Every structure is written in C-alpha cells, then in structure tokens.
Image (cartoon, rainbow, N blue to C red; front, side):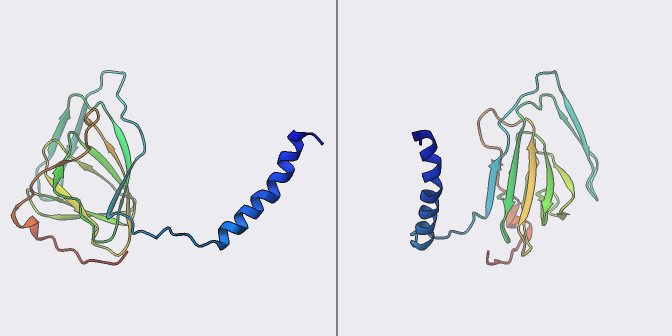
Length: 180
C-alpha cells in the first residue's frame, strides 16, 4: 500500500475518534445572547461604472410626496440586518437612500418629523430617504426581525448610519423588554 492510499484509509477512523472525544469533552465556551441589532455586510462597497443618477418619489400616509434626487448613488452596499425583540436603532440618517426588504417579522419605522409608527411586515419593502431624514426603527414584537438593506451613496469606508439626536422625548417610544 502506498502512502497516498494509507492517509485516506486512516483518516476516517481518526476523524471518527476525534469527533467521539470532542462530543464527550465539556467545553468552556459559554452561550452568548445575540447582539440587539446585528449587521452582516453581504457585498463590498461597489460603484457604478456607468453614469447613473437616481430619483425616488416617496409618499407616506399623511405627508406630501418627497422627491429624492441622488446625483451620484455610487458606493452601493447591501447588508443583512437582524433586529432582536425590543431592540431599537438609535436616531440616525444615512448619506443616501436605503431600500429595505423585510424578510421576517415586522419592523416599525418612525420619522422624527411626524412621530408616526409605520409597521412593515415580512414581504414588504420600504424606502428610507436618508440624506438628512432623521428616523429610528424598532422591533416591538416577540419575534426576530430580518432585513436586507441596500444603501446608495454610502461613504467610501465610513459607517452606513450617521447618529443624530432625535426629537425631544424620542416620540414616546416605549418597548417591552423581551427575553431572547
């Protein structure tokens, strides 16, 4: 038997023995709670190779149509975001618009200028205008919320959000503190 054949033959019993020992040896690793809001960048920041401008028209109930003109939406990045029960984003804005798809649960979005709670359940999409639009979003349910967000006009290497003081009293948002 050559050495090349011997390694695979010995590899199976050795791997099985290692797994058996590992399964019976206690670990010191402690389970940790997930962060209240987890962000996983899914794509690197990319730029358009063509000359692209963007215009979005957003009309929320009770408000006038907001026309967003984005002269250079380059530096696009997509992120997966997990929002645990009772978690709230701090008041913030973004360098450009963000298109958010809710894939699980229900996220509540609130603009600082009107303090209206707008729930977006799984299977819906909304536009976060960014560009100075101060807002927050939160999960006031007992279930985890999953989002996919595409940020346009993101900074070259900086954060995707810009923290900003919200309205006095925080629009009266009160979240129950659920166990997760």
